[in-house]
Length: 213
Image (cartoon, rainbow, N blue to C red; front, side, top):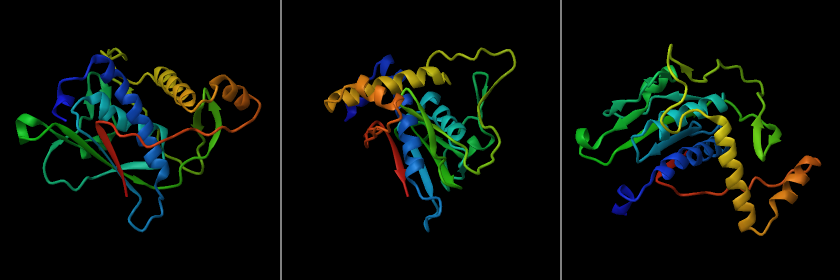
């Protein structure tokens, strides 16, 4: 649909990264790290914004220590950013690939490849309906982004505001429950009482794609 290139608003650019983070984590958790095909996840978007690409990849690395970036095997493309506006990303972010319309005569897009090296941590608690992963026998260095010296932690939009992520994820969860005819307040009370309501995760198609192998 060619209109996708022109009908996006600033609100869309604010919300898309939050959705993409959820999709990528869900894809990682769905993969068997002991799979005969290698337990790989390819994250690809038809976008060149850092907010939808490197920052989403960095978020996944920080939330899932049981995955690591690997080389894509692509023979062309521009390396992903390891630094951007005072923020420092994972050292292997240069293994991701960026494709620009003016350079390759294609629509702009981004590709990152993950390898799952262990089972996903088992959720041990929930806060506002969002699972908190527990580290299960996986010891990996802290991959959280580090702000550069003298830089401001806030970007023009997007960024690493995890509190904002939780708010948007919780709002989406409540809307999804309402569409199913379920009272979100009743689910919250059930959770507080020790219940384990369904996460309500569904496959969602967006401008970006996450392929699982």
